[in-house]
Image (cartoon, rainbow over all chains, first blue to last red; front, side, top):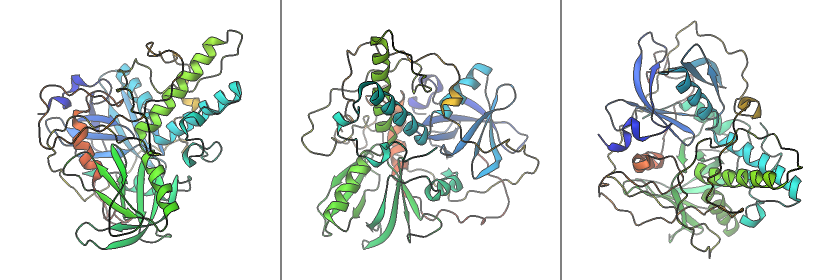
Length: 142
Length: 286
């Protein structure tokens, strides 16, 4: 097995979570958060079984040690994850909530606006990206 | 490899604004003719549709770890999206005008999540330093910071930019890229009795952050600097295996040795997203 996938090499990413998903049987999966995707692997395999795109999703805390991911277009479908501890659960919830591209974009627009208010200058100008569609204030709602 | 395809299709077609959209000609993989497709860039994903008003995308290209280059092709206004892994497909696209080509190349070059994260981190740091430097200043309520733990050092100093495009990204030394299992079947479990969500709100805004410790700065940088440009790409090392742990020089999370494999996956075209409603019952077994 490739060393990179060994759980202890990876801080938050790749911590082993137990899955139970629409079935009474707990399935242990290795889960890895990479940019806005959550990959999942069988624990002894190097290649992912699949991935979840983490856009327009809702991360909710469920009972102790458990959180869920559901998607806006299918709010009654939940992917539930059981962690080893409440602390681990909280870590994952926080990480997953910040994992979407849209969240990143909102943060950027927020900081840009705040800096502009304080300094009167657009902080993106020096990088030549002020006019990029993706960074426009008010263009991307929600 | 399974994906939550419905969510992908939703993201592609929902009315959140696109970062770029338009017709492009895409060179086929087996059939090397160019096919006109409607392309929509959202975040780090480039979707393409058969027609402008198609309900679902035909495919998607995930733009992490790629380079976008002008290319020598028989077709005018052509450019290429390339990935680090030797086995990854290169996408050749052609625009209808010089201006369109330049616009696409620019927006695709900056589309990656990593790039966005770099810029956000930089602005976050700038804001923090400004607030520290103004003792009388009212502290701005901070959004949930992108990083809470201290970060690994950023990559090497960027080379001077002499062209309008950022320098190619660096990829970690490549491991061999095994072929990925491809599972075209996403079967959904319609188990009844799942608890309804109280509302369909989207998480991730300031309201979710609650009170949180502010991010600790890296401490080794003085004053605001431009964010480092994406690190330079090393020559692809093809099939060489990494010896020992891979030094992840990109700003991405540590342990990115498997990223080269993920690059391969990222480069794969997802053809024929399943039509909504098709496939009947059954379970999406993760």
